[in-house]
View 1 (cartoon, rainbow, N blue to C red):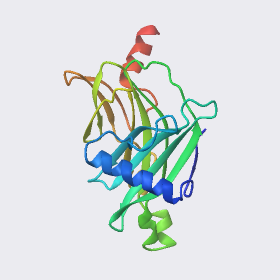
View 2 (cartoon, rainbow, N blue to C red):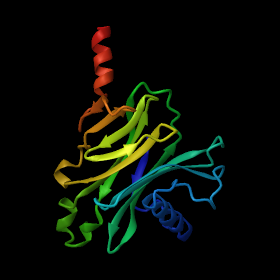
View 3 (cartoon, rainbow, N blue to C red):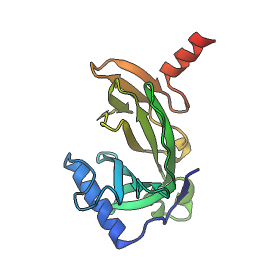
Length: 205
């Protein structure tokens, strides 16, 4: 179970790390900063939606250690800069090979726009969410709503989005595309399983 909160990260070193990761992603580079040894911290995935003003970073502290932990950080473009919004942490989840697509840990927090009109905005501020997506070898790209993301080599990625407060429990439709661009499977806003898995279960019943 991953715990979520508003103040898991607040140090200067962590802020520097996040700024470097965001900059690298926006420049189209690998998210792992060169000055950070992977044995100490591995950036698994980072998703920065510049148009939507939201982002998420997924990383693992001490990935080879028996006490390794996964962390997820949510970001928002607010007051002319990328700011930390909230995050969560938990034990590393080593998932077995995925057939096509699966969704795993995720979470969400209120947008920083809640500061505009407190306390009323607490109940109306948009919701920033993320989810971890695991992919099979046949997946070439993933559609997160109307955004197209190339499947990474490690077959894991994190996706972030913003939604109205009333729809905070819904995800964008997530679609797995093959290397030829054809649709392999999809997961709806409230679904726990993808259409490919549902079809397999139907054949077995």
